[in-house]
Length: 466
Image: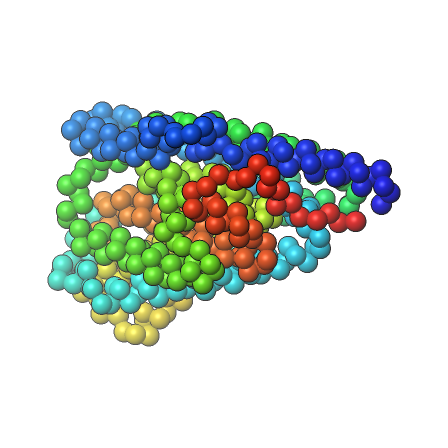
């Protein structure tokens, strides 16, 4: 490489560095911080107020609450609109900037090893808690008396969520259709292949990589604009949930609901907390750092609504772009800690409620089936309930009809599933980045302690392939 090319690339990186810092020193409201920001201007405060207002509206005026559903659905559609470009740009530029192509396989291997271990652990935790607490014991439900019409649709979906269907659905019809559809796995596949191709071309493709890096700055600014509507979306979604299902519906199955929430909390604080501590950071500081996104997930019952913001914040916290682009979207399909806890807990709850006594061998078989079906149903809308249906369809000991028992509170359980999944993916991103020596620990500490990035800090740009 000649001196002129080296000088040009150094100037480009200097410009990108200044643009990067300019992009990340904005706070959660999208405004540049200037002294003490009024509390009401923080996004997490606005979202929390919107959730509370939605609960009040939905409880006092249920019909009005149900009518506000388009606000929540509209916001989620706005966010989903930008998810594919965020993943594509982040992953392509990250892979293209790696010094060696085998780095892609190394990061992917570490990520999947992490996902497999913790997903299995979550299933085991749900199994242990269900046997210890036995939330369904004493209900004495006759499956023949249950109305199975409401769960028929989920059972039908489960029939089309096998591993073969899952693999085939990850392959898009065309290169462009992956970016216009709603499958994260298709976007992931195209992004990885495009990034590898860009990396293999080398120096001639440098202008294309620089273009995508600049496009990324624009896309993340668009994300900041869309996040301004987060309180409106959370308000509409929560008002609809309370208006349609009612707070009173929680009382009927409060035991299962409380058990699930408590188990998920223990998993986050103890299991993920210990993992975070071993990786050199605090799970509580990470939760505080992501408080706006967590409240958004709580309000919308969808972890996808906060995916672009999570990717941006993980980069801001010092995780390399290549790791963030690979781990976060992949984790949304394969690292579902909350969903896995829910599956074994709900399956055993149904068995206990219907007086079905499962032996240890049958419970182990249930766990093994759940491990497979949870991967097969990845990316399916309502994945938690669909995965449960797929699992119970294969394990004949537990009646599928028993799913009707928990359908009424599944919406409230979905919020906990989404929160646990979201936190699990945030922890996974930091751990894999540290595991791969792709984590700037000073930036992580600064971000988790609530500080702003220094204007002199350089962006985490990988070395060029020369």
